[in-house]
Image 1 (cartoon, rainbow, N blue to C red):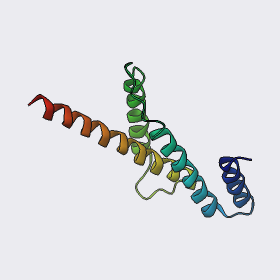
Image 2: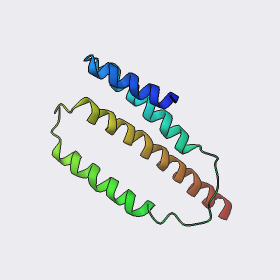
Image 3: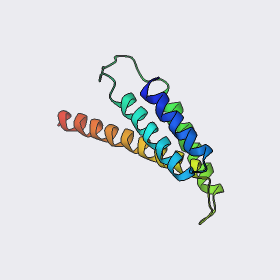
Length: 111
């Protein structure tokens, strides 16, 4: 059994025992580990354009705006929903920081 499978099994057992906060914490750790693996695979550069990035960013922005308008101030969301929102914020913020950095470096090189 892989480490990932063991972590998933642990989260499931915690969930079954009603330890929802602990299960959510384990899920968050798993998602962060998966994100880290995706973010730093082999740092391979690719020549092809990221043709899916713009439509995906548009969909993220639309879904986030829809949620923003539907969720009332102080409204309680399910734990898993809050966890997903936190992960999405972290991931899109990291992408934005990297793009800002790259664009800044390109503008700096052009001067």
